[in-house]
Length: 157
Image (cartoon, rainbow, N blue to C red):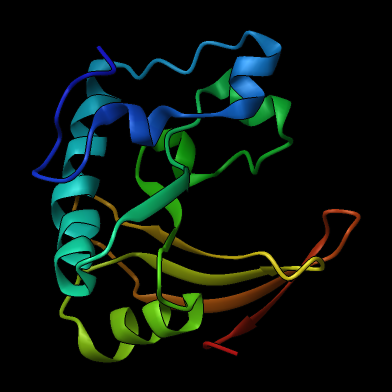
């Protein structure tokens, strides 16, 4: 199943990869509904971003099965568990630059964008999209402390 091509540049396995699932032996296989959501996410967000920047997108978190989400102490309402969110960065571009393009220049219809930064300077984009057209276009920045607690503020900062 993981060798399914979702779009020109994206494969299903990119949205399912999880070191935690591998290490703990947790299944991260999507249901048919989740597969539909991942295909939609790839086609409407990932592929247009990849085409704009012309560089590989590294997806660090996509779909999370309920067991995987529990194992990482993820939010019970996480859009990752619905296969409607991805965390990523783009080789050769700053995370802030990617966030600013999505918010200020693109015409992408997204639900939530979070510019995320950890205490160790690791950064990524969290981007989600609902399939029902009720997308909020919410923009936040988050700083994640070494204890895992996050502080959120509005905008890209």
